[in-house]
Length: 202
Length: 338
Image (cartoon, rainbow over all chains, first blue to last red):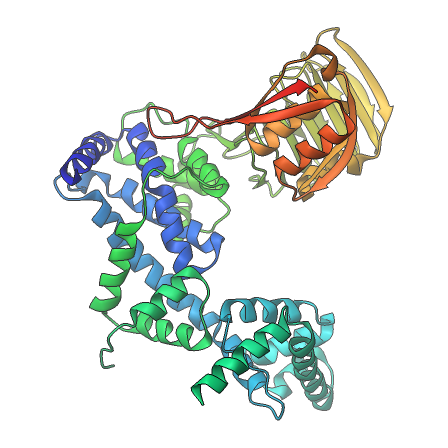
């Protein structure tokens, strides 16, 4: 069965080498969605997964004359996809680093909110809560937390006092804590499940 | 960094989307390792477990259409045409792509001004576009828009189907939307044009600014004011102008599906484009039933249920059939009298 599948691909690849667009289209129809599903399970964002699909197929087109027709096209796709996903994942992790740090901070207060479970949802909520801040507070907060600017820098840029910047950040953190405590969907269930599992462990 | 063995279960939870903070942190560490044979192996196994030949999602359909929409398709595949292929892709994709962008910059001066690019928006999708002059807009499902890669004296684009335009003002360069039946000429404004090949009327709705309607011979026939609808009946070759709420006609760009007391025959045409399905109405009288409603992010099934509540119709969906090449045929919905 496996060799049979490979044979079909190698015919397509031979046509592709000659610059046949319909062979390219057939390969896209065959593997496009598979690649997308694969990429989205690591990147968690459809737009990013689509970029991977685009990148991979552009490489296929660009390298079509050098494609090996005797080895599995699937492993070739996987190799490009693996490298692209890894790169994209790490780039994204770097950009999102500030969110992880924020979650850690919000979690270490005197009345801790635990973010252990459903991390994807927690991050989504954080994005949403930040987006819902008043414009000026959001601006100050993002400059500080995401871009790592100093209080003085932000104060100078916005023409406000350092004290005001500080207050905005304190208020923003308070607000986030409150939103997480109040609005987390299924909060109670989520908490009780967590407590139970902790009790079990004890 | 020392190599850590991968935790299969953690990775599995991460892949499936219900993962904890600790899961994420571990997976992240794994990804950050220089070369990780374990991760590579696990991901390869995951890759191999996924089925091929799955129907493309909307985003990928658009991508494929864009890959396909190159007028140089039939030419010999020389090194040069690869570049042109990329240029076309660069011109129509919104995702910035460094390689394509670089090629674009290198070769842009050489492009003949009459090279056209085409954007296809497949049925079931809406596509946002940016033209070379910075004008933007939305292309509705089942529509296509062709434009020169470089605008010359006039900014002429060719539309089949429906599009909403926000045209950037340029004093001495008119912007023209050409359809089979009429041409819309503007200086800078926002408006909607619906000129579907399977419709017997073309209409233009002006939201803001000023546009001129030209006939097939480019003769000025009418100058529109905001909130006016210019409709040309192609069968009788008769034009009518009416007062409308322009926002009703541009709401599709915001993902709203609006029916303004239209007959069921028109309603199903819109639904067919919106959801990429086929309809068959098996009753003459039903076609004329009027329907008024607004939907947002609603499933097709739910919309059909709503319509069947207010009209004496019932509907059923036919199973999608598999084509020879492994793709699926469109889903077909049969509408009958109750």
